[in-house]
Each structure stands twice: as C-alpha cells, then as structure tokens.
Image (cartoon, rainbow, N blue to C red; front, top):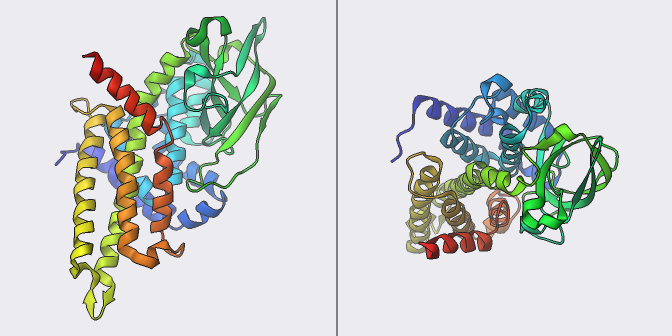
Length: 374
C-alpha cells in the first residue's frame, strides 16, 4: 500500500468527484462527438487540473508527479479521452515552463493553468511515425523569426488548442541536433487543421492533422536554444507524458474492473449470481492481481523514491490495460459487446493507449538498450 500525503489525498478525492459529476455523464457522448469537450477542459482549469506542474507564480499549483498521476487516474475513470486531453495540455505547458522565455511564460502560462487557453503538443508526422528524430517540418530562421513549413498528424487537442508546442527542424544539416521546439499560436497565417476522422477509440481528444504553409513565428517563441528540441521533448515525455499515460491506463482499467465486479454480483443465471461461477471468479482474480501490480508500478514511477522508471511503467500499464479491459468485457458476455454499456468503450480506449506517447515497441527498445548497456 502507498501512503499518500494530505494534499495528494485531497487531489485524488477532488478528481474522483469531478469525474463522477462532470465526466461520467458526458463520456458516451464524447465518444460519438467532441461537443462539450472544450467546456469540460475549461472546468478542469477552474478546478486546477490544467495547472498541475506550473509554478505558482504563473498561476499553477506546482503539484508533484504523484499528485498529477493520482488526478489523471481518477479523471480517466470518468473519461479516458478527457484525461488524455488534460495530459497533452500538461505536457505542452511543461515544455513552456522548461524552455520558454520569461516573457513567453508570463504571457501564456497563467491562461493555460486556468484553462482559458488550451495547448497541444505536436510532434508526429506521416513520414516519421513515432520516431521524433526523423521529423521533416522545417523552420527557416529569418530576421523577424521563423518560417515554418510542414505538417503533423495525430495531434491531441488540436481541435481545441490556442497554441501548439511544435517540434521543427531548424537546421537540417545537423540531423537530430538541428531539431527545436516552437510555440505556434492559433490564428497564425498559414496554419490550418484537417478534418475530424473517427477512430477506434479516444474520440473525444480533438485529434487532428496540422498543416504549416509558411507560418511566421516570432523568435521569442523558441523554447530553449536552437537544437535542444529532442532534449526538451525527452524531459517532458519522461517526467510528464509517460507517468501520465500509465496513470490513465490504470484508471481506465479500474473503471472496467469495477463495472465487471458490479455485473458479476448483479447478473444471475439460473438463479445464481454470475460471480459464483468458477470461470468468472478466475477472470476477476486475474484482473485484481494485474491492477495491484499496475498501481504499484505507476505510483513507483511517479514517486521520487520509486524503483520503476516511467518507460517500464507506461509499457506495463498500457499492455496490462488491454488485458484487464478484455477480461472485463468477457465477464459481461454479449452485454459487454454492446455499445449500451461503457465496457466496450474502455476496451477500445485502452487499445489506443499503447500507441500514444511512445508505442510499446519503442518503449521495449529503450528499456532493452539501457539493460544491455549495463
């Protein structure tokens, strides 16, 4: 068992109440359309979830990683999509905290922390997949800033965002050392969004394609120094995105498990509760065991004294989430395969978590590389 501090307990309870009151009633509709997503994200900002990790002098709460994880775990029990949108916003905000000029921080972070403006982290491209070092979007330096040309895909929050923290190539001759981050604001000339493509799951996240056609970006919107983009991305992914994704996988799995337990208790066949059947009890036992291991892994990765690194936590949690949600659906039988119950949505959303913020294959490669180097 993990011992939580009073502020961490308060964060967890607040997120649980928020999910119960605002997210669960809207989750099914969010899976069909994005109506109401911006309003829900704004409410998250009012409560303080969008300012986690932002220093108090910029309007945030400077929450530790474990508090962030606890909040995302509870929010994902209400809506995996909204939890992922929250995380994408937090990751983009963290990049500005780490690399922005003081002027940029002062102009953007208070609004981002309060939810009056929303952010997206845009990295992936059609030609590079999830390999960030292979991006092709270029930012050419001129006297008055940068001119950006290129495109991005699978940009979470793009439909909602007011600013886009965008990975670009500022010096093609330098390879990975020539990659940087720029903040590109909504309304910039040449910036356009693609249409809404319905996916298997995670349909409330505002994911879009982005096109940059000679977008002019002020020099003060560079994050950090030129060429430090991959270094900054690594920090954001390791300290925010991976623990956050693991937490979302955990919360989604807990929601599926709770639904399966309720069904096993309430559903009767031949006058006997479904939960008395040996096959069902085996599935419940496996889910419970996986959840305990996931929780320990996720909390450990988010703790300053933990022994599990975020790469391992994200891999284990997202892989396990697919197993837990599959078992939960199986407990429901044919009822679980119906869209009238949320368990099939948990399964579809869980499948997408293996693809976001580093795929399972990339995580395995990174983990193996470190292990073999020792």
